[in-house]
Every structure is written in C-alpha cells, then in structure tokens.
Amino acid sequence: KKMRLFGRNIGFGSWSEREPLARNPNRNQYELCPSSNGGQHNSRALLTNADKPRKVPVKVDPKVWFANERTFLAWLHMALILGGIGIGIISFSEKRGWSAAYGFVLLPVAMAFVIYALRQYYFRAHAIRNREPGPYEDRNGPYALAIILILATITNVVIHFIAHS
Image (cartoon, rainbow, N blue to C red; front, side):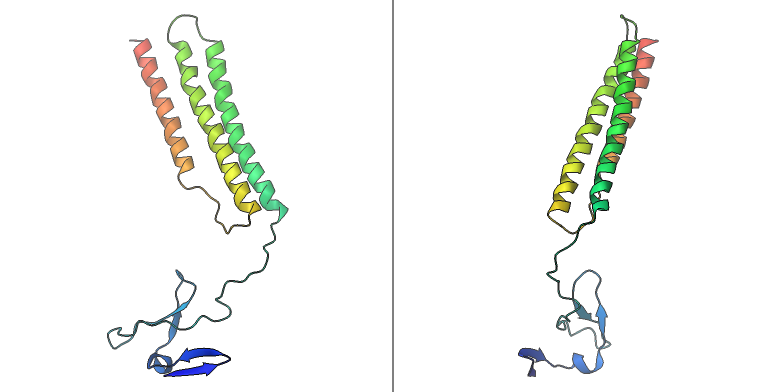
C-alpha cells in the first residue's frame, strides 16, 4: 500500500504496524529489527529529518590548526634528536673501524621521521582546509616508524658484534 504525505510516497506494509525500527550504527538510516517470522522483511524505513546529512558550513576552530602544528613539531623534535645522536656518534667516532656506522644507521631513520611528519602535516592541513570529516589519525605510520627504529637498533647491535668479534 502507498500513501502520499507532504508530497512523498510513504509505503505501509506489515512491518509498519508491529516490527520496531532499530538504529543501525553503520548506516545513516533506520532498519528493521530481526522479526520473529524468520526475517522475511528486508525493506528499510524512510530517513527522518534528523538522519539526513545537513548542508551547514562547518566551522573549524583554531585549536584544530594548532593541534596539527603541535603534532608536526613533536615529530620533528624526535627526528632532530635522532639526527643529532647520529651526527654526534659520527663526529666523535674513530677515523678507522666500525664506530661511525652506528651514526650512519640512525641518519636515514631521522630522515624517515621528517618525511612522515611532513606528509602527515600536509595531509591533515588539506583535510582541515577542505573541512573534510575526520578522523585524521594515521593508524599505520607510527607502527612503521617504530619498526624502522627497532630495525636500526638491531642493526647497531649486529654492527657492534661484528666489530668486536
């Protein structure tokens, strides 16, 4: 059965009288709850006004921009520490031997941190500028950097055993 209400077709079936609607968190609409008759109904109810996407301009707070810059500076700080340690090891190492290799292993890791920080900063700034919906976090990048840092540490240990054997 169909009925027109405020210029829209509204369908009425057996589900409208007895089966309750449940909010589906994965979709922006209401769906039918599982029914006791084996789930034969798989039609959906109409969207309500509260569920429709709104076309209101999104205001971006300055704290969002500052948080992006603060995160960028924190990653650069870590890269600067790693690079400084690497350069310090190289400058105080002996002219012969393997001691400078410890520093040369840390320099590419510091560069990877800088590249990651810059990429994330530009990605987030672009998303904030275009008022794209979040979340803005990167789930895989910090794990990749941690693995690179662990591999650099293991490489330094291996270099130490090779140099002193």
